[in-house]
Image 1: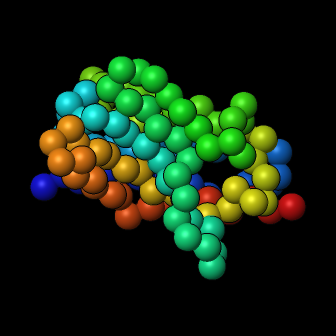
Image 2 (image 1 turned 90 degrees about the vertical axis):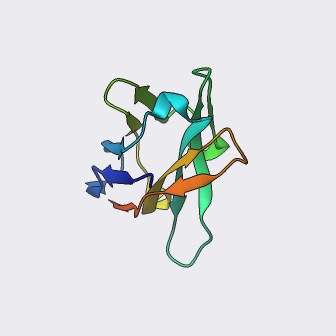
Length: 117
């Protein structure tokens, strides 16, 4: 069973930074893609960033230039560096892993990020 454990969330003032980590129980280099999603209060979960097996990255427009996704394949850990945080970035951030076969996805339990104005 694949396990993903997020950490690094917390309370930060607008303009501040946080670094989220996602420790995986499997080799993330074997995954088609690793990503981050978030869910704001009362809203649907949305995609934030992806790092695929080719080391290409992609971001939702609202975080481009502020967030950076990276990975350490040796540690099987994915990171999300979040700078210039805004109140609208508040939410629970989830780590996601997608397999090559059938595109099976796995989710962590999430870490809460709260940005105060």
